[in-house]
Image 1 (cartoon, rainbow, N blue to C red):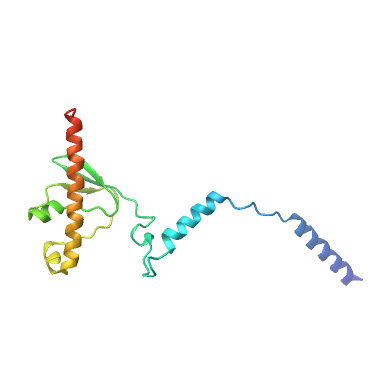
Image 2 (cartoon, one colour):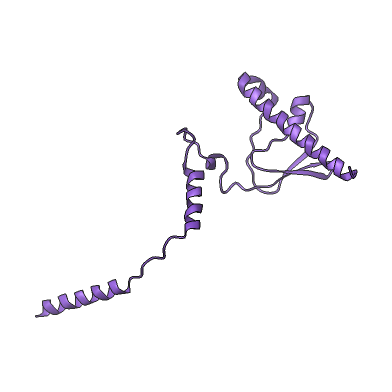
Length: 150
């Protein structure tokens, strides 16, 4: 008789617990899309080479680097930007002041390292440097034109 009461109590408790369970809210389609984008950015590799977008563009790598010349702010750099390209290409010392407003990681490559690199690597750096120079020259030209009212 005692076993029967225990069994009935257990069944009643089980029934009450199952009745109290709530069904989860249906998934939010927008949140699912955001999560899928995050998965692609941080988990999908490029042709299986092991690198993801998140390899280079880490979520915790938000930073600010300011470029000044003669005390005047010229620009703010973002992830992947370079500086010192004018000095490298013209074989002069860099004249701008580069200041990080928080912790950053930079890749420093000196002239000797560049000379020792394979020709294809040097060519890729030179291409990026020249593209950077052209973009900055275009920006400066636009700013000067706007200042002069033209």
